[in-house]
Amino acid sequence: MHKKTFVLLFCMIFFLSLVSAVKPLTSVETTQGFIVESVDPTYVRTGEDYEFEVHVFNSTTGLHINEGISCYFHMYNKSGNHIVELEDSTSGHNFDYSFNVAGGNWTRGNFVVKIQCNATNYGGGEELFVRVNDYGEELTDPLGSNFHQGMWMLMILFSISLFGVFKVENPSGKLACYWVAHLFFVIGTFSVWQYNMGYTIAYSGLAGIFKVLFYVSITAVFPMILLSIAWMFYIHTMNDTIKGFMDRGMDEDEAYSRAKSNRRNRK
Image (tube, rainbow, N blue to C red; front, side, top):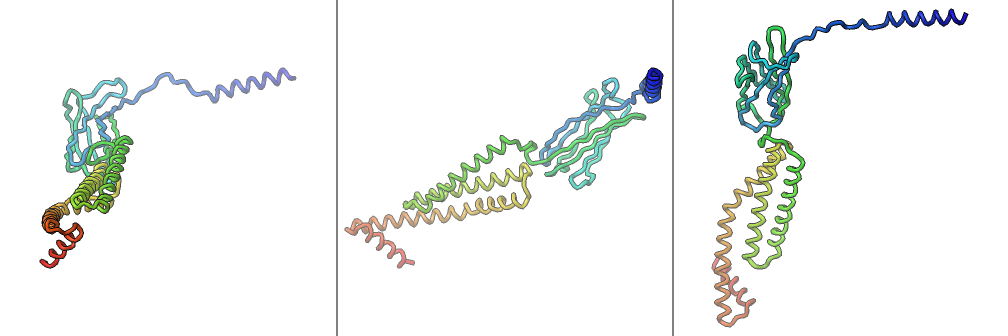
């Protein structure tokens, strides 16, 4: 009885395996297609022309294809608007197709590029993501670190110069400290403005604040030059007047007081 049960179970398992077995593939029909490879810039400089070179290969044989196909280029901005559409049906440089995108199409931001190459029965394509900024390069950690270190150094020097404006008693030294602080302020605001706009890492409003500060500080240089000249002339005449009073036998405090009084009366 047990032997019959075992034989019956074995037969059931055997026939079940035959029923559920996948039919072996004796031949496979490979669908021929194209492998499309193009220059992937990743980053492009704002307003600069850029040429995409596209190479097309047979996916089965790996051989390049240089005739009988047409390649299409489509570019979209971050809002999804279709801004560039190009076509090339003639290969050059032995076996590549090319698309030249004018610099006017490259504004700050992100773009999507789709390239499709077709023959009568076959085709292939690829999709690229391109970022555009004023430098045409990625903001790496070393670049960011170097910038931050430079800005910390400028801030320290600016603070020291500003401290000298209020603590240095000598008029010439006070004037020198002011101009050094003003120079560091101009450099700092310009650097932060260009850094933010160049790498497109901040809202335009934030970069705009530093842009305004830069223009205000650089414009203030011209009237401050005139004021500095007037200040130096005033100090020079005051020193001459004080020296004249001291030559007459007055002490320094009395000579300084008399010189100020004379200047006030002249006004």
